[in-house]
Structure formats: C-alpha cells, structure tokens
Picture 1 (tube, rainbow over the protein chains, first blue to last red):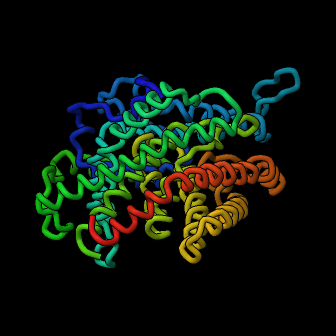
Picture 2: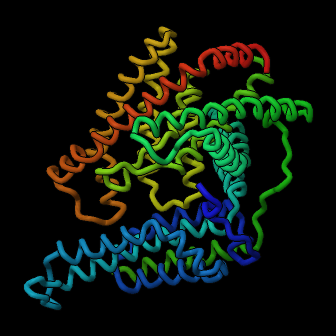
Picture 3: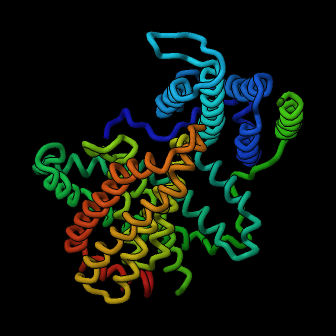
Amino acid sequence: MSNSMIIGQYVPGESFVHRLDPRSKIAIIFFFVLIVFFANSVMSYGLLALFAIGAAASSKVPLPYIMKGLKPVWFLIIFTFLLHLIVTKEGDVLYNLWGWKIYEEGLVQGAAISLRFFLLILVTSLLTLTTTPIEITDAIEELLGPLKKIRFPVHELALMMSISLRFIPTLMQETEKISKAQASRGVDFRTGSFKDRIKAVIPLLVPLFVSAFKRAEELAMAMEARGYRGGEGRTKLRELSISKLDYYLYALFILLIIGLFLTRS
Amino acid sequence: MNQSSKLFRLIILALFGSISMVLMLVNFPLPMLPPYLKIDFSEIPALIAAILFTPVAGIVVEGLKNTLYLIYTGAADPVGVVANFTAGVLFVVPVAMIYHKFKSTKSLVSGLVIGSIIMTVAMSVLNYFLVLPAYSWFMGWETMSASVKWTTIIAGILPFNALKGIIVGTLFVLLFAKMEPWLKQKRVRSSTAA
C-alpha cells in the first residue's frame, strides 16, 4: 500500500457526460451492453464504435485516465485476438509465415470480438470515470425503488453503500497507519515463511475491527441525535433530476438502435 | 430489536463491507497459480459479521464488498465479481450456520472445514457449468471443450479454493481466539442497546 494507490476512478469535470443524470447513464450502458451483441457487420460495429468513442471524447476525460481504466483488460483483448487468429481456419489464407497460416475469417472474427470487448469496457469504465461513487449509489437506490413494494430493504442497502463509500479512504489510511505502527514494533509483513506472513496479519486486523466498532457506535449515536429514523419521508441533499441533456441522449440512443438494425447483415 | 441497535448493526455491516473491500485491494497472488486467482483476506470481515449476527449479515458484507469493488474498478470483469460473491457466500454461510447451532470453538473449526469443502466442491461444479462458459461467452472465445474446462478446474480453481479455505480458515481461527471475549461483549451490547 502506498500513496500511488489512489482508489476510485472519478475524474471531475463539467462535460455533457458528467452532467447527465446517473440513472440515465446506468440505463443507457445496460442497453448498450445488450445491443453490442447484435452487431454483425462492419457498418454496425462502426456505428457502435462511433457512439462509444464519441461519448468518451465528449466526456473530456484525458486519454491517459481512460487508458488506465482499460489497463487490466488489454491483455485479454490481445489474447482473444491472437486466439482467434490461431484457432479459426476458414476463408482464404492471407499470409503464410513459415507454415503458420493466417486465415481471413480468423482475422475478421478476432478483430470483431476484440472490438466488441473493447467497446464494452470503454463504455462501462466511462460510467465510473464521470460519475462519483455516491451518485452511482443514489442512482441504484432510485432504480431499485420498485423493489420496495416487495419489502426489499432498498433504503437500508443504499444507506450502507454510502456509509461504506464514505469510509473506504478513511479505512485505507487507517490500515496503512496500523501496519506502520505494527512494523515499528517489529512485526514483519514482507519476509518470513508463508505461515509467518499470515500470522503477521492478525495484529493488523484486530485494531481495524475494534476501531470499526467504535466508529459505528459514534456514528449511530450522531445519526440518532440528528433524528434519523429510517427511509420513510427522508429528504435528500442531492436530488437527481432528468434534464434536457438526458432526453438528447435518449433520442441519440434510439437513433443508434435504429441505425444498428438497418446496418446489420 | 429496537431502532437504535438496528441502525448500529446497519452501520457496522457497512464498515465491515469497507474493511473487506480494503483487504481485497491488498491481495497477494500465490506462486504457481494464474494471476486471476488471488488470495485475499476479504472473507474475514464477512465471517465475523456472520458469527456475530446472522448468516445473512455475512451475505450482506460479501455483497457490499463486491458492489464497492465493481463501482471503484469499473465493470472490467463482472463475471469474476459474481464468482467471488458466490464463493464467499458458499464459504461464510455454512460456517455461520454450524457455529450458531453449537456455539463452541470446536464447532467453528469444523464449520470452517465444512465451509471450505462446500466452497471448493461447489465452485468447481459452478465453474464447469456456469463461470467458464460465461467467461468464454463474454470474451467471445470458442466454447471450451470439456477436457479444457476440467484441466482448468483441476489445475487452477480447485486447489485455489481449497487453499483459500485453508489460509482464511487458519487466520480466522487464530483471530477469533484473540477476539472472542471482546466479540461476546459486543454481541451482548449490540443486542440490548448500542
């Protein structure tokens, strides 16, 4: 653990994508993920790519940040591409490299599937890049709202999510502090046998849990003192609202779907 | 249960969810295993919650951990997140059920052993029928043949889950022995008033 581990991906901004309602973003991404699987021609993939890359560009998130989000999956994208290139043996032979033949179909399929994968990851990571975790939680609470009818504790879960999100940075710091404090007392986390290293985790975990209880007691008391009494009739500091921008997005997305079905073969 | 201990329980589970997520980020890959199988201690808070309260509390912590992870890292690997959640639930729930039935340290140890076995067996079966096909569908790979799936499971997934069960279980027993008196006191307090 070090300062280089900044968690969360949110990049603040004022762009079109940032200002969209998080509910719209989640819904559109959900449908985008579904329609990606319907694309089967060059034109239909082109349209989807245009939409996804257009969205990424209009978000004004600097390219390095977007690339960082894609980093864990580059390997998979390239691996998938190569796998198709090697395994698929249909169509004309395009190139013969010392007996290793590259077939046309393999190239086409590999490219199509890597592109599909790339688009999926690009669009979903755009959500976490342009939306704060707390906005995502609020949006999930709203979208799950109908489940309240079957007595699913939507409000309670959303409250827990926002408390968790609030405390992640605090607990990260605390973990680091405790591990330094224990290291200064001679606990060795880095060397030693596997068993020793597992044992070394105990003095790290005990204070973490004890302080969690202390914090929870304090927070519960503070919330009660301010009159918290469950989700009934609770008002919010940040209200979500659907604006003109969201309607533009819906219109654009419907055009994309129509275009997709016209261009697919 | 009165309102304030309900709120306390809600908050403590939320904090356990965050601890779980933090512990998940400090995972360390084991030698010999492929990099996508990583051992971490994120099951520990869920175990404590399930032992302290109910098995459902353990499921809630597991759910929180994975949702937080998904929100923070972006949805690059949704299949892995769902698989992690399932494995966690399959491990934590049997342990807590056995412990709550007998309430002794011995039952905790046998619970951890049974939990590890259930998780290992069930995850191998689920990988064969659901997780690996889901991966190959998601990545657009050719459907894996039965023998490829079996090799992956025997060489990777089965030993991984067994090892995870052993490591997390050992750590938990050691931790629980240290924290038991304190936890008992907390249990009494949180079930009367917080």
